[in-house]
Image 1 (cartoon, rainbow, N blue to C red):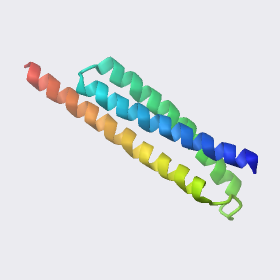
Image 2: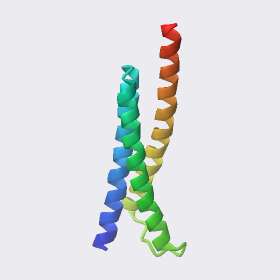
Image 3: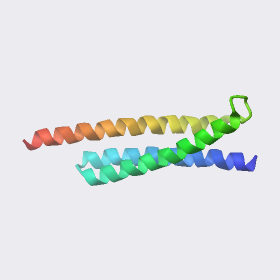
Length: 107
């Protein structure tokens, strides 16, 4: 059980890192720091991949048979992952939009 709790915490931490890096990328883009925004999005993608790998491992352990306990911390971790993935997708779009606007303003 302790390994399971640690695994769920790793999922939560990686999802949080993905969301945080995505938000930092948006802030960098607001300041037209494009290289920094790109680096932060790379960090977000890496953290998201780690979180998704953990989620995939948990799904494999469950085998669709309810073998993995679903408790509040598991639901919380899954919610964080879903939110982080959405934030990452939106951050990519926001950065592109800000870049386009900056290019238009420079003309």
